[in-house]
Image (cartoon, rainbow, N blue to C red):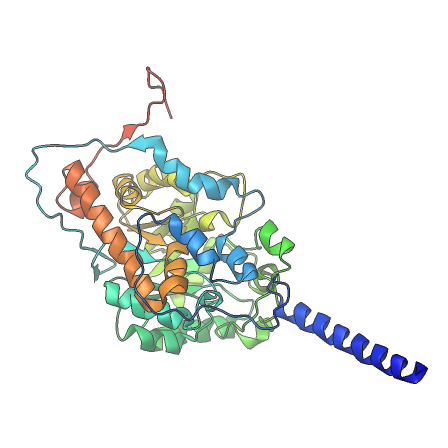
Length: 404
């Protein structure tokens, strides 16, 4: 009898150890699951308010993955400011303007798009949906706009290009410490038909993301475009992955990337007018104003708060792309009126992907198309170019309006 009890105890102990190992390797922050189960939905989604998508997506994206997508740095104060900053200015309603069915089409770097909104680069769409970036690319292509693809995508650049079926795509580059690997990444993107290189310069180290730490989040899937010399990505946190990238950046890195490609080079992560000037002098073909969605430096300003300053410094020498906090038509309108040529969305695209696959991505862009047209109509602007001439009104919270 004692031997039987001893054997059973050993079996149970071994089973417990194996279960704990699988939980650790899974790294999703979820109890009781041994495999990461991303959504496989395939349907159009109904959107009343873009903010609703976050809670809806949380019901289908595993906890660790959702925390990574949703979260920002530290207390997330800057992330929250990215959305509330748009309330600092108001749009004057205009009447009797003769506006009829506003035209939301525009272009950026010689590419015609159906609305002034593109998909921002974001890592690991496979956390949200089994189709990953390939699914996103299909939805973005159907929507008639540009797909930006991260080095840290969970689909290969070839898979994403194929899913886009010739639609315009840009490649976001995180430089590695290996010059040969950098050259191969850029050449691969160029050979596959990507039409610009986005050099991200605001992530020399990863932000201190409390949600990821609390969830003990590690990527449960491989990021296939990261050069092998940078090490394994599956089972690693974003901080470890950033640490393997080049983390000392200078204006010469813009020149370095320019020397390796004939494609336009967009410098992403600009939050100060002086940095915009440095980037342009170094050869940037476009400036991307962004604070990485509030995921890097907490305690900094909202991206929208600095957009006008940067735009004044750029002075129309190169196009400006803007992201961080865009959720509705009035945000798009205000960003363009403040100096952006187009805006980009990140989290809403991923939430749409999780809730409906490529069709959900189309639903997100359709919502923004309709909402932007409505705002333009009520503000008396017929075209995107007319939005750029609009003066916004400082938002007054008291009887006497002071400076913002």
